Image (cartoon, rainbow, N blue to C red):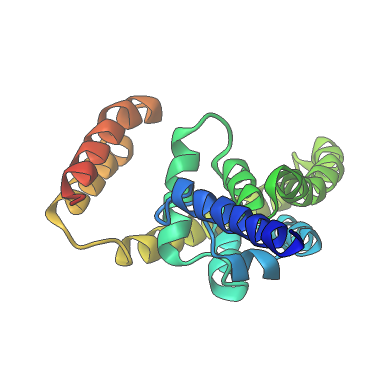
Length: 213
């Protein structure tokens, strides 16, 4: 009887694992292999996004990509691009949406809360100090010139990250066409981002759906 119960319990566990694998598409940006999930602890998540929040001078996204893709290698380029694209479409700041998705992927809801806390606590503390400083010294020409120089650095970092992401995209007519239309709509024509997304997001989904065998 004990052997039968053990075999039945083992069969149930194997069946549950198979159901989880069947219900979680491998192509989903939130899916991750078991080895990677086990290697990323709650502490790792919090400290990684804490470092991103403390060092992200000139914009968070380039630093987040450097941490997640190049240093920690928790995501590859395709996964980072997919999560960032989804974060752009969803309401809220894209980097906050990205941190939520990364946290959920590795440690569930607790991981999402830790990722957000690590990402937002340092900038919040620094921003309160800088707001006080700017209120008293923002009119000084030297301070204004320093802020202008930081804006140029920010633009260069965002441009470098964008070029790096574009270089790793599939070289297909559909992908290049949608990218060109997005650049023309938001960059050249100055159209509102929400209108560009409402038009191009369904188009890109349909084009990608037609390529799936």
